[in-house]
Length: 302
Image (cartoon, rainbow, N blue to C red; front, side, top):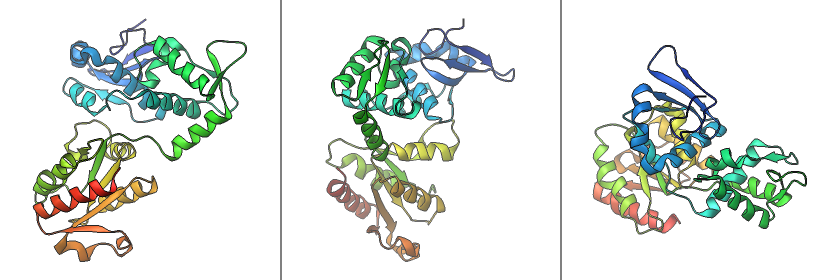
């Protein structure tokens, strides 16, 4: 059987795509992904001790139904840098509850293969998964099936926890920035928005993300939705009045994600009428934007 390029364990299948230098991989641990021929050769050296993170990231994208990760020689480091750092135990437990809730109906027997399913929780081994499951059983979120040691049932408490996670998904320390991608306003991002996010005295410290500055191979609309969903808050600057910024702010509001509204003062009167109910920062210059935005982040994002 072929060997997965990420976990180095047996893959279900690896198929060349249309006689090109690209391969579709289906691995029971890592899920599905695509990889170029050059990346196949170099990926292990680039991953070093982070193979488990990429394995978990691919597996999560697969079961959530996101577009397949397209790995090539030039984007391995950027993919790794986009994966949130190691999560606390509670976050890993939540990931398992979220997976079970999405993959199995309530009352249905849940089968977990310890040797294959540990990437679901961003873990490194089957023994770590057994530990997570033991915690969930102790907390009465899962219970063992009476006829097997790898089969479980979600308890009512576990189902309620899953439903709560769906309403209030855990967030990273990412701050998504929606704005006009025009060179006339690029310095406002670099010198004001990005700097205000990074300089804010918050715990945790937040990391700005502007989608046009991220290397990726996903359809742009899909990637935007994914990144908004996992962000702690959104900064939407309406200078230039781009339709995409209105959409992204509205999408975040629908998910219950805080949005900080900003607009250059000379364009404030052009804001769409149904946005006037939202408090916004109107700024004169980059220093003004930096100072007002930093205060707003420190005062409203927790």
